[in-house]
Length: 629
Image (cartoon, rainbow, N blue to C red; front, side, top):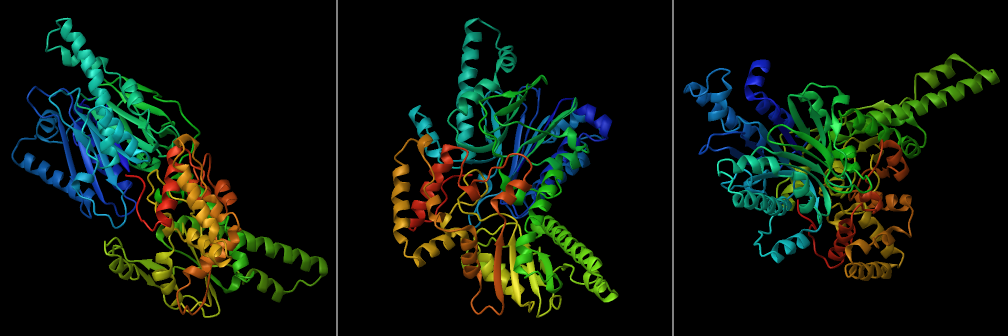
């Protein structure tokens, strides 16, 4: 998750209007904290100061990979500010002393939260923003982003073919080197032209700043990028840019006023932190870039040809905060769309059902499901009363039965212990700890009742079987229904949501199990051979043969097998899983819907490369991620 602020007025303006030269720094902290939706793997902030005197530092960065990275970074800087004030180096609202002495007292501020892979140990060097320092402000570069790049090997070879020596690390480092290469090219061309014209050396940096064309630089640098990304960056002279991938896979929102440009991955943090209305927050179109030049000139335009708009729907379903007005409506609709399946799982007996949610991110969908169940019940009551009225069988007893009973009952069954964390690296320890993350409300469900728990997604099923269902079974319910507000996750992602190892998907495991049970193992071998063949084709010609794994079965058949597989050994009650339908997903999501996790239809060639490699890795018993964050 990214955040950035580019001030369009001097620091003195903000000190006078808002009563503090720290206004932008504090806003950056809040934008990052408001996007801190789950346990992050690290964080970082960066700053560039405009028009600093020669010899004075102008670019700064702080990164941290601790469990409380945001708090650690900003607390350290607040302590530093206090010390500077105590020493008299920063005086009241004086913006000049603030800018001179405080490292993050600049006009360009950037921040990033790293959400990586469970079980992988990240260090400070993995955290964004990444930076390249030079003794030219117009060649110094800072870059951060939300991304999944699918063709890093190809990009590395491109760097090597030029004679460069890239370090094979994270995707952001590769993109930094690629943007840096074209920045250097443009810089050198301008410099040599000015030098040959005998322009005074003191004037050259100012002219280069004015003539640098970031649209052209980014357009050239990004020609071969395949993936989903939202990148924010800045050149040392103060030129700032933000770009979104051609398919709009990763989300990007901004506010532009005459005072500042503020950017965030999510819409609501901008609304809350900057105190603006929904309509003031804009979405950066796919394939577009915002550039703010050093002198404050702003341009928003295409840097490449946009493709089919496919924003990641999993951000709406799960990763983003549910208080966004659009996401809130979507998640409620996803919950309501499960009504018929949940009613069927109860055999129509709503009076013997308790409805809950787990985990906390499923709460909004839970409210939608409750509304759907209540609407269903009202409809049934209305039908029964009309029938009784027409038949003359209306009575006080019937009215009491219809109106006062058989309504869906909401309960808070599971409570998450926020003090416990579930990303211990050892698998056995993680399973042990996961079993204790939730506490149960005892006595809330009767032994003759059905407990329905809505979940936002069921990806692996491991936590469900090893901990959640064991916990919920202690409620003494006669049956437990787990309702997923998302469809079956069948295919890996490669654009930034870390769902990569196909063999760990419970829906995939269920399909493989059914193939083996029905003597169709040769289909698995055929798909493996076809996946290997796909990788011999040019990337643009590749398809998804893994779809054939699911073709022999209906979604209900796979769901039934999932239910069997997640049922704990010696379970004291019946376990049933129900999933959102693809139709329900598309009806709930407002606008375009990138659904490759569920459909296997990827927006870029790299997606098809990833799914083929992932199946081959599973077949050959290799567990690895086919892309880098």
